[in-house]
Length: 150
Ligand code: IDP
Ligand code: MG
View 1 (cartoon, rainbow, N blue to C red):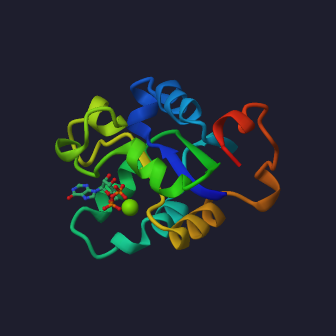
View 2 (cartoon, protein in one colour):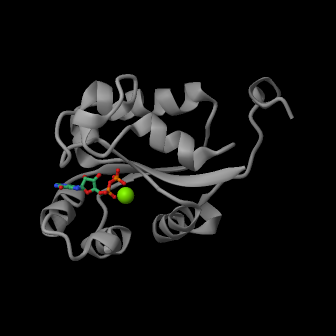
């Protein structure tokens, strides 16, 4: 099983889409193993988006992502990293498949509702930025034998 870091960004919270995002994740069969709502600090935001530090949109991205409450989650499941990226859709909503969160609910790259880690390395790193080990729950869901063949 893989774990990945997922965020409903401040635009998703302001638009009342937290439940919509969580609904899609749970219905797919993925498991929420950690979740919190908070306004992330500039320090955490800069660590989270360090790979984009040289990009022209970095400052506006940091001020946006820290502008209000967001919902952080650790999501677990088979191929959770790739599946969550597909649930979210392409970064620019114009290119996001209909049926994905961004393809159904967003129009602008800078207001694309959700984040999900893009690789096993970034998932491990991002989970460690946002959660302590003690905040992540290990548990079985009663439907797992109906979601996974083995
Ligand atoms: P991702 O969120 O799909 O992984 P990244 O390329 O890692 O996409 O970019 C991180 C975030 O930075 C995007 O989700 C988006 O909010 C923002 N972003 C990326 N490219 C642009 C841009 O060209 N203009 C404005 N914001 C951008
Ligand atoms: Mg990214």
